[in-house]
Image 1 (cartoon, one colour):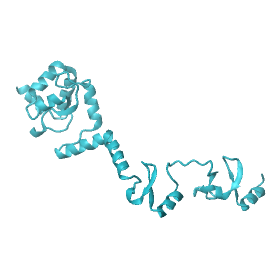
Image 2 (spheres, rainbow, N blue to C red; image 1 turned 180 degrees about the horizontal axis):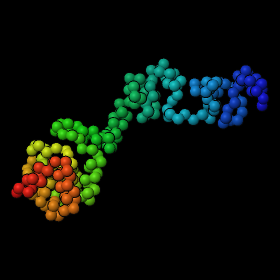
Image 3 (cartoon, rainbow, N blue to C red; image 1 turned 90 degrees about the vertical axis):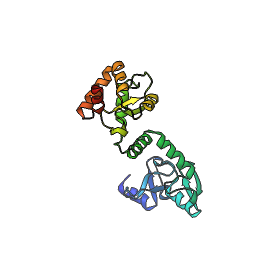
Image 4 (spheres, one colour; image 1 turned 180 degrees about the vertical axis):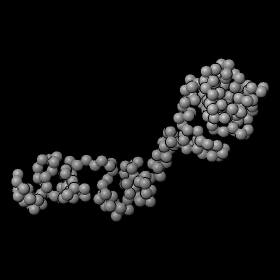
Length: 219
């Protein structure tokens, strides 16, 4: 096809569809401001939207009817029932629960807990690294799977969330130890799990957080 033939088809209100491989009326194409003629390369019968949900034109039409699309229900609902983010109250609540049930929620809860206690938050990777060092077991040698991170030197005694003052612990040991001096628990851990505790001792000395170590030596 020559340039003159191509321009003649355009003047006739036609456009070439790259999917149909034929000329179709311009009205069959959606808008695309990034292209020279302002139209999509594929007709509406073949164009697949990258963003799920209704088109802008459909949204405008339903807005006149007082309706807004809910991305969770995938249905048109009264405008008052759908927030500006595009979700009704039940769907927004479900999305929030799913979000906070994942890693992001763990980080947020850890940050809030740290702020409440006047501590620096414990990074997520720190938890995993400590648990791996002790093979997922309580650092105090009871043989129970670890579930929490314990401050070896208690927070109420000035303990901080710093390297060398954190150890994985089971709920039982964490509850019994509470604000007591940690010497008995540390001694049991050192006796039964010497290698990971040696690394903790090295971290405590390196970061000058060895208060619990001084107590152990002075006992």
